[in-house]
Image (cartoon, rainbow, N blue to C red; front, side, top):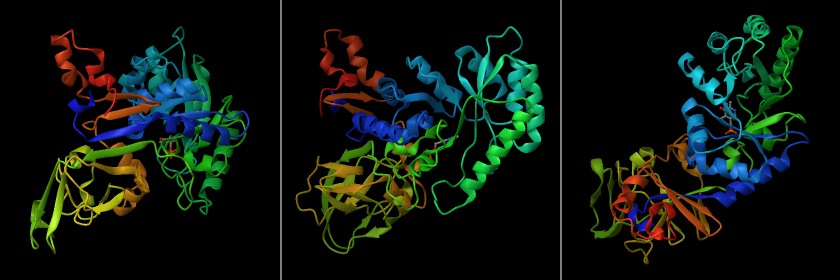
Length: 409
Ligand SMILES: *Cc1c(COP(=O)(O)O)cnc(C)c1O
């Protein structure tokens, strides 16, 4: 039963994710396919569960993660789609990549050198996607690396260049010409590589923002992350995708305090009138950013209620004086929709000077994920086994009492 878990949950709408997948793939030009970016636990949503949806929908060509560990987790869970690792990998991780047949994103000459010395003729082969730095200055081969890289690839025919790619620095701003400059640089680098005898059957450049701007070259693949999760990919436009995560909790305590009462650490807030202050069982250890102290807003009875006082590690206080119906146990939405009101990751991010990505992947592992698919509900928590412990001791407990198969709230 869900009731064995804390009431603070991130609810993940797998149907909304599937609809976003369909909406995004239908935007792509002919012969272009989607690489679903699922690093950082699918931006905080849970990579395994969402990867299963990708497999079911059948419109995702490949999944991509940053870390070898993230790729291993997906394979261990039975995900069979090809997995591209884009993060920089270390030399000791290369044998794992070869063994598991992950696709290696080659982010620099040192990775290529490590790969070449880890394998060799007679080794089972490895598919790489070769990254070029077209102007972001962070990852990828630069002009000066191309000739040596081509030499290594000629000597190591067991390395298969499955694709060549680059990453945009500012595609979310349609007025910044740098994106088109990057495309030009990428094409020039491709020509140079071709002269050096290196070609790939496939290219990919576009992130979510570039897909939303429809600047994907037909046949190229696209690497989308944030749009899949329904947060805004563009700086000043709406992509009209559905937020996938609703982060909710409930009022743990409610009390009335007189005017002039100090609230929370540092007593940074003092009530100006007789006030009703509710305490929520969520804090910065869950990813509710401490910069939301005296800044944040939550939803209660379909209305906005302000965070008052500092966000603590495990607790947040809100002022519910205006919401007469408020009572202990009432559902509270931290992120998402309630009634006609909505708090988006972009709204929270703007308040504290960051981006939706950080808000979403910041929801910590301490927060159970509740997956909703049709009428099916399933809780995934790092505490699943501990909370399930009684099952091992009492084998007669019915399946419906297992938290991992929660039947309802
Ligand atoms: C994270 C990432 C993406 C996805 O970016 P979004 O803005 O979330 O679509 C694409 N490519 C690379 C290399 C990335 O690291």
